[in-house]
Every structure is written in structure tokens, then in C-alpha cells.
Image (cartoon, rainbow, N blue to C red; front, side, top):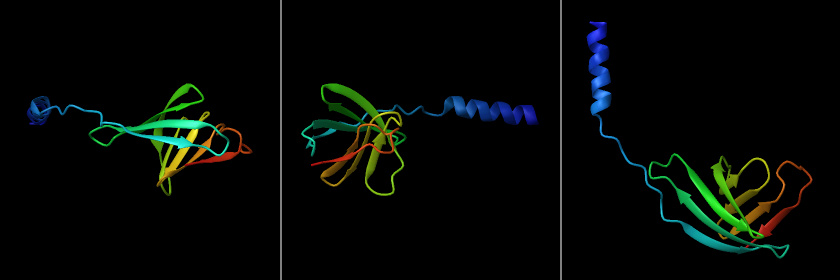
Length: 108
């Protein structure tokens, strides 16, 4: 009985429709920061909502940052260098997340 139940379960899994993931059209914003730097940020998400990320250009360098947990707004970081925290039309930029003394720069 166990073998038959297992085979039926496996065949049901094999017959289930596979959903294709798609990428949302990006929402792109340009920010001007208090230190004079400019950010171009394009926000994306997968159709199953399993992943959201931002592709940003800062000082001529490109970064892809996954969305991470945030108490308020949306937060994107590589946990190594760059962090972008957005809420409404404002963004906060941290250029060195590993340095607790790094300045947080406000961008509009």
C-alpha cells in the first residue's frame, strides 16, 4: 500500500502544471541625494512574489540588491556594501553597511 500511495503521489506531482515565472516591468525612479550623488533605481519582482530586487546605478557603478525585511518602507541591500531604504518619494542610502559609523544619505 505504501509503495502504491507513493507512486500515485509522485505521478500527481509530475502531472501538475508547472507555472512559469515572469519578471515584472520595472518601476524606475531617479533620486538626487544630499551629498550630490544621483541614483537611478529600477524596481523588479517575480510573478510569484518570491523575490523583489532593485537594479541601481550609483556613481557609474551598477548594483543588484535583493529586498530584505524592513519595519517600514522597502529595504534593499547586499549586506556587504550598499543599502537603499525607500519610503514614499524618499530614499536613504548607506554606502558602507559594514561600517556602523557610515553616514546615511537622504535622497529625494
